Amino acid sequence: MAGKAASLDLEGKPAGGAASTPAVRLGGLDITFALKTGRSHCAVQQINLDVAPGEFVAIVGPTGCGKSTLLNAAAGLLKPSAGRVEIEGAALTGLNERAGYLFQQDALMPWKTAIDNVAVALEPQGVGRGEALERARGWLAKVGLAAFADRYPHMLSGGQRKRVALAQMLIRDPQILLMDEPFGPLDAQTRQIMGNLLLQLWADDRKAVMFVTHDLEEAIALSDRVVVMSAGPAAGIVGDYRVDLPRPRDIAEIRVEPAFHDIHKAIWATLRVEVQKAYAQGEEAQP
Image (cartoon, rainbow, N blue to C red):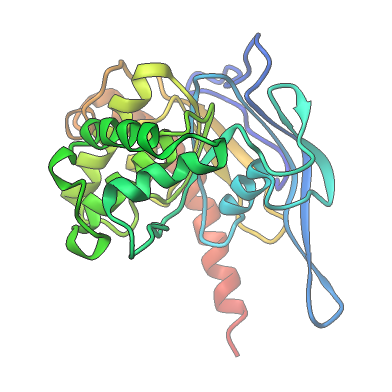
């Protein structure tokens, strides 16, 4: 079923799709990598995915199925082998200037303070240093680090560094947020705190979000839709589920709601099959 989306919500109705122009459209997307042996590896195949303006879409799937590959294509870091990437209705031909990218490992500069790490994101826009520092100070306050502006990354906890990285991304006011396991390295409590902070900041202006995670509970708690990818190679989309849970949400509280467990059960029924396939492929590949 690789390459085909279930595209169903929990009642079997079409999920996703919007009347407005999608913030991100992946249309018939294939991404193939050349190997040193002369052969090729197809990472994802026939991906069709729309993310509407203001929509929070989480992407889950087995390890190695190409989740990050989709983000890299949407960022303009990977050129499709087939199909196209459209950003707000226009074909993407280079780097996606409308997107901000938050990686699993932060990219803070160790020789810069927290405020300088945030302010540096405005340099490509030609913002003067005085204004950049003022705006950076405001963003540090938004992420709860007003008192840590002069600290260097090694003086901050993992959660604090992630807050600086979040401010560094958001200060540029990107219209699309690409987030690749951003809270993966954090402990469970800090992940909940960061999840709530992200939802709070996102609610202010509702950016379009593509959020990759291995944590299905995190995906449901944060998102409007959860997209399930198949086991690779040539992975496709095999499920697309709406998350009709009320907002605003608290990450801890929403997980105890009966509706949350119903959604989790439905999505896990699809995801479990793909995880088992990926595990079986790994076993077969053993010498």
